[in-house]
Image 1 (cartoon, protein in one colour):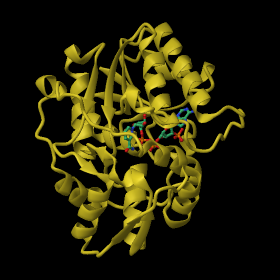
Image 2: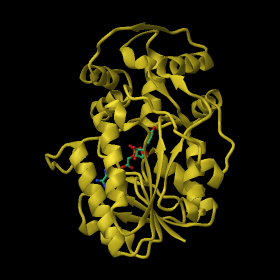
Image 3: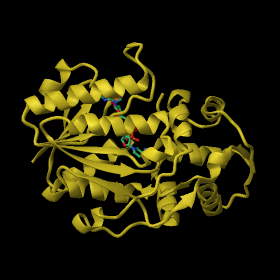
Image 4: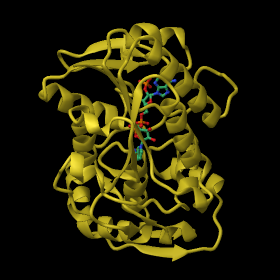
Length: 306
Ligand SMILES: NC(=O)c1ccc[n+]([C@@H]2O[C@H](COP(=O)([O-])OP(=O)(O)OC[C@H]3O[C@@H](n4cnc5c(N)ncnc54)[C@H](OP(=O)(O)O)[C@@H]3O)[C@@H](O)[C@H]2O)c1
């Protein structure tokens, strides 16, 4: 099986590639900038940008399954003048069109949890929209919807880590009490790789999450406890996502462009509706404490979304 991994330099793509190689899959990795990408032996690297439709033809040639891990929440490096939602929509449309043309059988997309009735943030709405665009083409789509993924290098996890490490007293708005169902990076990878070998996941959407539902307040508490830190959180009624993102940019390695939509999304509950995925890809789910403990053992990345 020939597989294309987009977002190969990113958090999830870079973790999935070794997992696929270990299972004997032929991997092609897509990045906008191959010169900055140190590929693992055996990985074919292609230059491609989802905003440049022509660059995708070559990238998708003779591919059976393509993983879609692209988002545009970081800087608008091409200077398109489009919002991140518009760029994400356009990129997904280019990708699904090119994949259809090249006879790709399936696309596997990692999107976000969150419910329509909950006035979704721009970020989560955009993730949902990308899924809809990807589903509209010739290839079958498998969508996995996740909340925060716990692992070193994950943008949301790094925000949590740096804020808790550096601030003994944290002023936080009411999203602190929002509930979420985070997932360990290793569980997410098992699901992503498992889908490849389970055809019955084609054409379906699955919620993926760990065994624990926690508020962000509790998450910070568990993290601080595992690190042996005493932390105080003071709740305030209002702290705008714009102000929070500047603050996060100052304290953490996460860029303000990326922090803002992520912070905005914290107001939405992200909880799995069911665990139907376990019938097709059975795994042992990692409890939250163990997920954080594992992430703490991994090396820390320098810049995120810069
Ligand atoms: N991290 C989480 O906690 C989390 C939680 C739930 C869902 N997800 C979803 O998982 C997926 C992957 O997230 P991630 O955390 O791995 O993201 P990430 O680390 O920020 O990586 C994003 C990737 O997108 C690529 N990219 C950006 N613009 C591109 C373009 N125009 N053309 C081609 N590639 C482009 C970048 O590659 P180059 O710069 O090399 O081109 C980069 O590798 C996303 O759909 C995200 O919504 C993540």
